[in-house]
Length: 96
Length: 342
Ligand code: SF4
Ligand code: SF4
Image: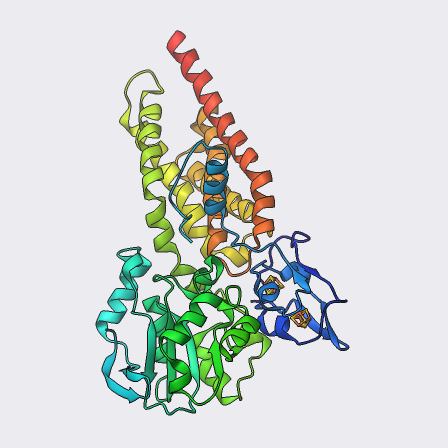
């Protein structure tokens, strides 16, 4: 999927290399190869490809990766915002 | 039960054996689900299934109880011996269910216990689709059940290669594709979902345009509705299909661009030079705004857009869309008032 890239500099991905034990789980779960091995630990090599799915953070045994995860779904967000301003109390989940 | 071929006795009771050939009914069901017909009830019962004649040492593959996922997996694994553990995701596919948390650690742990999997197999390894990883914490599954989770490929079609390669997935096998065909099959459900709002707006638009001249002119109404339908189609159909070729990384910009093409087409087809200023403004402001809105909605379907990115796009583009529609509507309003007064 080389030609699909989304907005730059938006991902909330954060790696605490000090806490990393180098198990490689984040490399295994990331669909977009955001991490690469770096010595006995890992490093972030392509942050802009991150889609904030949260797989790395969920599977990191030492909580070294953090990302505010969610599905990038506009209709879901609109429903969420509308219900926040109490204008529309929908039961729809955004359809995704 | 789709593909049921018989029973297999195991130390934990009998397990349903399933075949790997899809029947006409399965294909028809998939087609219906893509159009959103009975989509929510398109599921298989969760539990343990046998493909071929699996022995205790054969691998366990985990999937969702969305029937289309289940069908794709059993078809890809034709001619092999495997255990298939189906999780209760309420008929939602692996990727969406992992995001919602139903394809998750608790469900997996509970399903392992409910099916008495430890008595059926003599190893402690599970193979999960990599797109399920956002919902499942492998280390917690290990701690709670003793089973080691291996994340396999994004596409079920790559599972045989993965198994034959000794359970190693290349970066390419982990990456979800988003081909023309894959984008195409997502469109029907989006179209069906757009119907209620589109119909409501069409009625208002028809009346506004038909009465806009002071005398009731249905043809003006139909033109406005056609222009609007085209704008929706540019966002819902054209943008997803032309995704790699439309400029910009932003979906709103891609959609606006597709909408602008439609505006120019209308201008050429309907003798744009003869339009009054209101029509021209509406065509070149409102149409791209509508297309951009629907294009932005498609971000929820892609396997590469991030929520922070979508939020950023919405913060910028929604006021822009509102402004563009306001320009069109205001100019129409002043125009009508002037006509009615004179
Ligand atoms: S999963 Fe966590 S501990 Fe393991 S390599 Fe990645 S960051 Fe390091
Ligand atoms: S959030 Fe998802 S896409 Fe981003 S780095 Fe983690 S696994 Fe990769």
